[in-house]
Image (tube, rainbow, N blue to C red; front, top):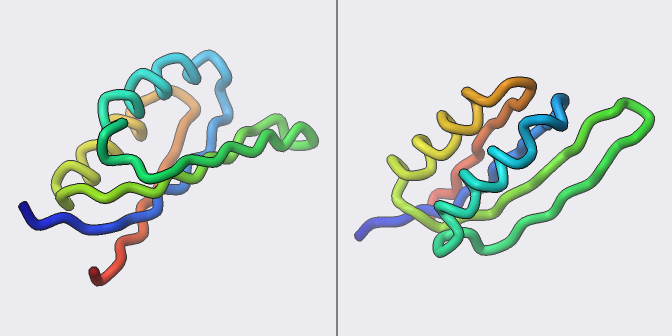
Length: 81
């Protein structure tokens, strides 16, 4: 299995989507190295960073699932490792 390390940046603008987001992230829990969430109350958004080690296709699928959630956006940055 050829895996890559990636950082996924997630912005949550709709708090009603948090439960679904957590369920999706739990599906990939065995591949997640770490996760950090920062609420930004002044702008009423939550910023989440997820570091993951998985196959590139799995990371792309994860980002696609996250992007389908209402009021949630994500971008991934991949390492060369």
